[in-house]
Image (tube, rainbow over the protein chains, first blue to last red):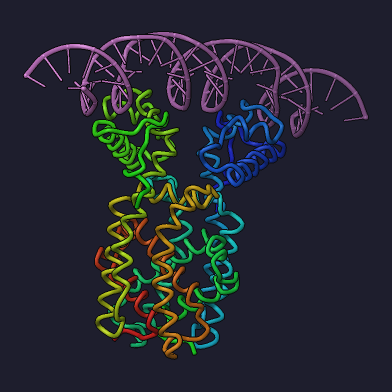
Length: 216
Length: 216
DNA sequence: TGTACATCAGTGAACGCGCGTTCACTGATGTAC
DNA sequence: TGTACATCAGTGAACGCGCGTTCACTGATGTAC
């Protein structure tokens, strides 16, 4: 919260009115569309401006460059992770845990489906070491990891998860799996597995890893 | 095999001699270096040429554009996956399986450490739908997935892995996990887990998912 | 062993496009009285 | 309710750099005899 709409200010310091906020929004939407359609390599300020029927000069009233617009979008995605994280909280026993794992996987894959273009670029920039994108990714992924970590740690203390499992590393690995499954499940599905299998099976892996129980 | 050095031909059709092959190699190495140092956004033909002390015109004797050089590098990575795949073959019972999972994870993470810049860009381009990069990724990832799939299917038939697990989807999910762990384990390690934990724990997840057994 | 010729390899220099970016200006909106 | 003024919002037009790309040419290598 507080990272996009709220503290939105024009680059010259003016505060934005209704009209300004709308324009800014349309520029952001156009950025996401173009990223989806043409990919990162072909993202151009001129095109973004053209798409909303305005001029490049307008774009520069709101963002320093194209990257900065993408960064704002990445923070918006981070905010959308909140509800997904909440799914983790609660009991993971038996059917309830399995159901939770499935809802978690579904929600996260749907988040990717909705925002794959932005999340892809965010991950690339973060992996390449860009600090601003690292932070934005962290804001998404950290909450997820920590909540999963807590669950795993509890099952481990109860002696149900192997003591050779490092809870944080396990949580991070599961998040890693979900990230990548979100990114390319559509490509995997060309080789056999149904879309449902590409939810249910990773969900089972999550469940088994968190609880240390094998599903029936 | 047969995708890079062997059928290397200058763009005008001339066959390459010793000297030409060396230059081509140096251009490829420079491409990987610059990709690592500056990231995808700042990869420029002029810079690649400059780095090997030659002129842009030379670059264009060997590659149509910068993308094509990266593509060749991606195919080279695909060839390097062969030995990693072999680790999968053999018995996965008990300690032997655990050891195999650990060697697999180690080898794949090391592959990422050695070639992260190229693999990152390959994945982005593939995810964005670029056919050539999809093929190159497939060549890496498919073998891995299929070999894991065979193992999982066998344990499933033996009744040790849940029948609710789709073997191909499970294999793809594990590969997804390894991909992402390879890409960002260094970032995770800033939050607690040791480098060893970021190998051992995903390895355990692989082991448990393949064999349906919980580790002690 | 030497010479001539074919082909491989490399590049200087230039062109031109397209993109990022800015400035000086016009128009829209809102509010004080 | 109307008018004036402040500030918000938008842009046409231009500049200039830098990058991709090419061409005509020189130099290096190898091989046939």
